[in-house]
Length: 299
Image 1: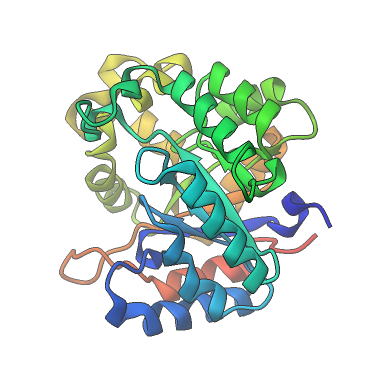
Image 2: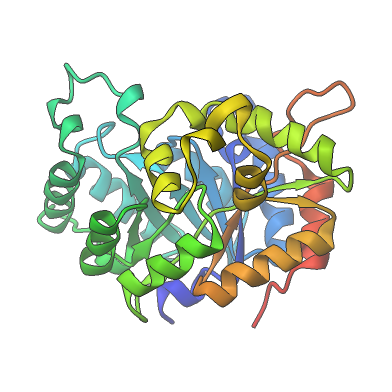
């Protein structure tokens, strides 16, 4: 079975699945097992995880694909990453997908990584290193974070496909044109399950604030027809409504259908949730269960 078919229609993307604290590995493993039982095809580890952070998810599931979204190419030599990737896939039935990215130039120490200024060249070199490692990473077992045309072409030509982040259905349609019919297109879009739209937008603004400071996302949104005015005051309603699904489960289903109609093969969905005191919830099980009921998880 082709790897992109094994991803399923919908996956859960979560920072909460990023097990940096060993004491939480049991809790995260239980969450992974439930997500698999709910029918989600892929569990995406958000943030900048290491390969080892996939282990609790793989060990507590038997069918789901586990992917990183994304490992930064600056964080580990390609040969070491390739060897660890091969070990995990040998142990866990080939269910591990390597999601790679260059991250954001604002967050990388340019003294340690001079190629940050040339991310496209750096990515090509890294993929070549994965190709020539003692245990190469096959192109169908790796995908890359891609927003602009050059990165999308690189995803098409040298990997399984693209993992665009914070995009719109319109971006998805344009990305499909660049990728062609065969490459994986797995966009991420964020969900705030709250029928009070103004409250949902407030939650979304709090989450989006960091991303509004990052040049690569601003450039992507400008290419998609937004303006600098859309970035003011935490993001315009127009921007929020475009990159989030806000509202009840029916609204989320409607937005998922839009991405699918635009050419997405798979949807990676983060749920943005808070408790009664407004604190972020990193393993929002009730919301995941609601999505499992609302979304078509199987063909």
